[in-house]
Length: 139
Image 1 (cartoon, rainbow, N blue to C red):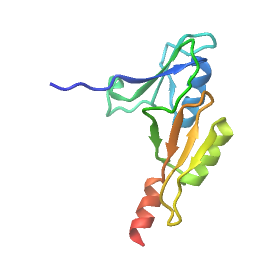
Image 2 (spheres, rainbow, N blue to C red):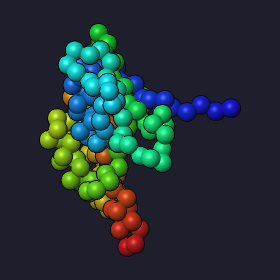
Image 3 (cartoon, rainbow, N blue to C red):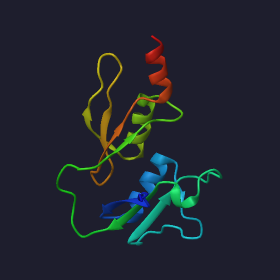
Image 4 (spheres, rainbow, N blue to C red):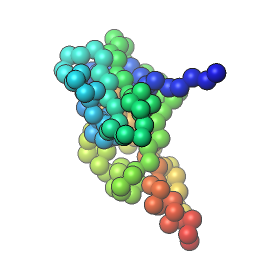
């Protein structure tokens, strides 16, 4: 027997604000019929509909309000790979949404990643896109 991940949960000071930020970053939406609203203590976002993937297997993200602030580095984080732009374009887009840059781990050969933090300080990384990886492999 195995288990599947139902959803990934983030502790948050403002669940609604976090759900709005991450929905924009990931292209996710609220659960149909259960919109996230200011003041909600739990806010779920889900990927767009995909007829080939059952709704329960689509990588939901849940934000749950907690009373304490984030104080240390994440022990788990998301690595994001842009789907329709370069790593640099995605970094700029996500910074414009309210992220902050924590570290620049890009390498001279074009590899590496950029470490960002969401508005509540949760770190995540932006990697090169599949197109960038393919172009690098073709060289």
